Length: 159
Image (cartoon, rainbow, N blue to C red):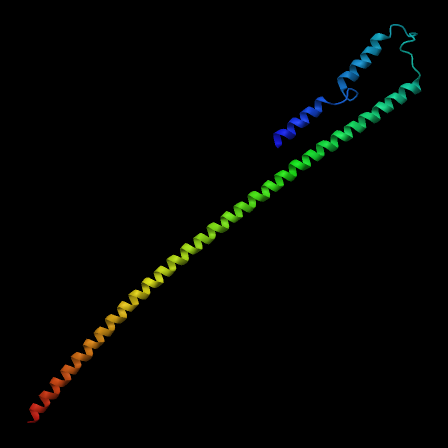
């Protein structure tokens, strides 16, 4: 799109009316000066009012063509700016969506890791708890046996 717009602008430069061209205007004045051999030549004689009106008309046409060209260029630039604005907006949205997705993935990974650690710690706690229960049972069994032996010894001493 950019290349097409630039090519269109270049084509317009070459399509300017001849009245707008500065080099041709200079050639026209040179022709008048070189064409007037004598001050009384009838071919180059014109009334001051007629040349003024024609120059004003040419100036008006030149202003209109410049105005038209300016509006076209402005419109083209506005289209280009709108295009780049839309593209920038789309790119920014894509980057934000990508970042949001990456952040969510990172959070999910962290939560999974946290969940894994918690489950692992709970399993360790259950193992430790079971070990303590087993130890407590052994301790109770040992004291029961010791108490029974002590009772048997006490009875034997009393007899």
